[in-house]
Image (cartoon, rainbow, N blue to C red; front, top):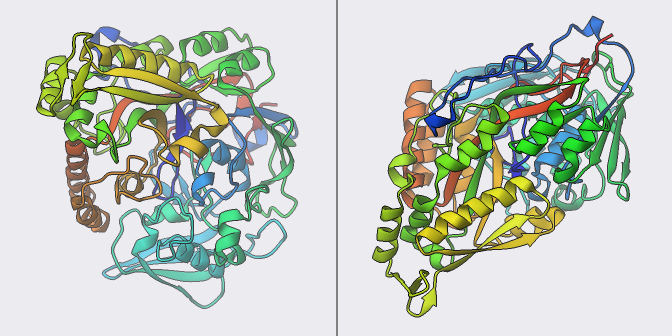
Length: 574
């Protein structure tokens, strides 16, 4: 399973094994007590940030931080659809920054390295004022100005379909970007109100970056936007820059950015190496890595716990595993079949098997928009896709299927046989597939696996909707309402791999995005949630906490749900 994430109002793809989060202090010693008998009911609350915090002055100068990623980016432009993979964001996070950063509670604050002021000037019309820090520069020393933001916004607003963008959420609601008294001060005027406006001015949530801005020359050129960064990284705007990319050894080395204008980073070097998911925990236990994302794999959890000079950190998460169904053709084009599949899956057992063994609260993911613990979260799933094999079989009969002598449902002489595409060498994906396969067999649905190379899983299968069913993870955001839109609407949105939608969602999302009253907006968002469940394009499974093994002495880095990492203060305790 893979993982996708994005602060800017779209999801980010990620494998089922990876995730991150945020909250203060702790080092993960404060473990929740889990009662797995409670099934899908949340049994404890995790902190939002669980890393060990330390003052900048107490972090020693120098040192190398070695981390693992799933793959090298297919495109280093994280605003381009092929580049919207979590691994790319993880690699580039130390090289990126933006006027807005996310805080420990999921809110936002101005990052003084990039802006002196970001504020909402008026609500009707909606006008946002941004005053950039004149010291902020691109990697070659060129100042970052309003021209870069204006061009980036225009490239992503969806009007030019040649741009292969991740999503036009928020961007499409902007009318103009206008310069004020200098090239560093500008106003963004909206033609449609959007309450998540701050999302497009931020680059990362808990260590997974998305470019908030591109150089104007790149954003203004379709070919440069789509293809200019297939084999080279974006220019740095952060404390680190990409030093070398070893495509043979699958290693990226980050070094301090000599044009960085802010507080000097403590680390001398950051090494990001590609390691297969089935080898991650052992590499950490062997001290080849300084930290490892455990995900929900018990073997990885147990292996990571054995490291004597390490600790397990666990925070709330923004990542949720699911089954995505291609509803554009075949048996899954029938909503009754999709809901029958969903009703047949024992999500309680899947969640308990994934979460209890890693000491995490056991819960199902019951919303497409909000995460458990996030304001606005409610259970809109159980009424529609709650585990009920009798209801599943009834839905299949309503869809015209009858059970054959071999126990497999059939219609017009064709057996109900589905194919589930999964990424190779991913224990989590394999276990979830086997559980779903066994569940579906009970109601007469045959499920076979199509295991594909991990490095081709997204590019050749997920992103091209080249599957019947598949599983990965969406990595969410502190701005969940606008972020979810391009996953479900319209049918041809860059992240809507299901190929289907409900046309009502366009107006519903427009209303929710334009509602600046937080309570009313939550109500509208949950009406959207119910509308999506009604046609069931995706089966949400498990909310995944951020569970990391972290070397003792590594500070200001680790498990966090929302909080942006300060890469200048990450390092080793002196």
